[in-house]
Image 1: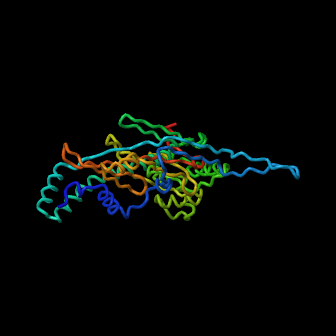
Image 2 (image 1 turned 135 degrees about the vertical axis):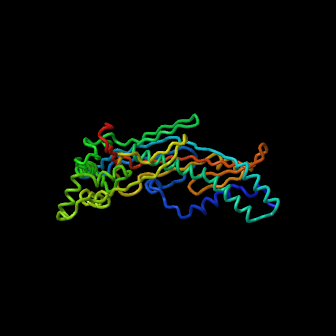
Image 3 (image 1 turned 120 degrees about the vertical axis):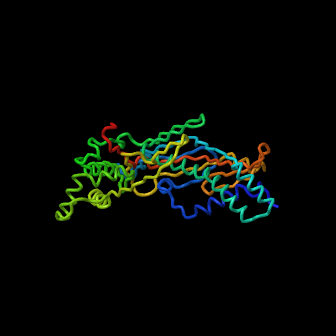
Length: 348
């Protein structure tokens, strides 16, 4: 007869997680920083230069070509942070499971296992939250700061300082010239060889568009004076028409280690982006993956992108402990192609 230790295994937990999340769509961060597996804990990546072409230099005939330096190319090497947390099975559920195992009641066993797995996959989901949190932080600030459990990491991905700015008039002010602000950014980046096509923010920014007097008046004129108010959708369409930039609202929220809720993208912040991925989410090798599997003291299963799930029995208390660990960090190869704007002038 199967026991607690046979039923609650890393393999079963991972399979349950995959099955219950099969229809989940990629997050914004996963789209902009797709996963990439690495061996070990060291991250090497190269930040590219701007795409603006530089004219060829003149040369005499029959002369050897002058080798051009790779201007603006920077190589970065850093150690990726290590994340690890574990949890036991809830004692009440453990007792219930042991009771129905002895009574050989499969339907009740499956119902209790579902409760146990629902509880345990919260750690796996927490790993994904941490990765998205890092991706959104680097996207909207150019830096990542981590601090918990006596550990701290700080990373600066080198977004040029002249590509971080604050507006002179709040976008929440209906007299602000939002269109001009956006077009100035588009022109600035175009002069560096970067084509800005989209922007990400949360709804605090989007709401400013429909309230903006200049945007409302221009749409009113285009409509022949037939409308008195506009929707956010109509305002966004007009902004794209006038600037070529499509705005996306990302309002997802996460809860930090202290139980405090935060938006992935802070209010009043806009990141202007070119088309395509901006970097990668690098996933290194955890001790659980590299060492614990071979020791045979625990059952270890991997989720495809590099998150390790380990389960092992404990004697005091008698229970099954599940541990989730990962080594991960985004790279930002296209940091030079991003412009970050604070739309709140008061924060200057």
